[in-house]
Amino acid sequence: MTEAPHLTFDLDRPGMTTGHLVVPKGADCEALSLPVFSLNKGEGPRLLITGGNHGNELEGPIVARRLIEWLPEAQTCGRVIILPVLNPLALQAWSRNTPVDGLNLNRVFPGRADGSVTERIADAVSRLLLPIADTVFDLHSFGPTWDFPPAVVTHPIADADLMPKTLRMAEAFKLPVTLLWEYDDTPGMFDTWAHSQGKVFVCAELGSGTVGSEALAIYEAGLRNALIALGLVEGKADHPTFRQQKSSRTLETLMSDALKSPARGIFEPRRSVLDEVKQGDRIGILHPMDSLSANPIDICAPATSIVLAVKSGMYVDTDARVALLARPLSL
Ligand SMILES: [Zn+2]
Image (cartoon, rainbow, N blue to C red; front, side):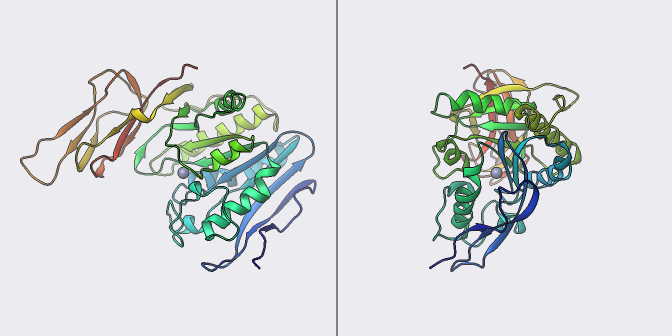
């Protein structure tokens, strides 16, 4: 008989509490104790904030810790639960997936109590934390191999009520981009599972490149805006400044908007994120390296669009995604 996942404290206790979410041990590793912060100020919205879903996306855990510093004074009602690191094993390895079982936590929800460690983490979160929340913010980032603006992302949701509600919540962050992202129908994502439980779930994609102070300040301001919109804290929401601009736009990107590398070689970006491009404009160049007689290949925009993401200059395989384009969302 395996031990059940549990919390080391009572989530219904009023006021601030810190403790752990215990993920039971299994055949592959010992039990994990994930630090949890809970601030219960009674009636009101119930928000769960998670970071460190992917272990090489460090902005989320940092911003989650910052929030814990000022929330006890700022929060006026409702409940906020913060789990800064969902997957400590991946974080310690600076790896997207868990090294022990090779699994991507964001592909195994709702998890399995008798599964491998990644599945046991998902099971503990699904069972003990998700049911308490009506809104979830999962803090991701695009990582060091991309240029990408600070954004809040949601995937298309079949539920006709939940879709506009989720989009409104995402826009309340007032980050430079709110994105409706058509994605592979990938099973096991945390957001898909939370949506199936009727939760408003938004995924913050907190920029890219190295972890920098300016980007972190933008993310923290975005989260504060979202907390104000929920009515959890008082104050006036404001657009954070990104590249000298205080604005945000709502964009849509489809599966067909991914530009792929026509060959293997070094990708050289020629555009920056949020650039507006026309059909035929060059987004980047692929330099084949296998032969000195092979010519560089232009990678061009197929239609008028906005550059959403560009791969950093790096060696890529044939068919690797090197850019994502987008356009203003029209619902
Ligand atoms: Zn991620």
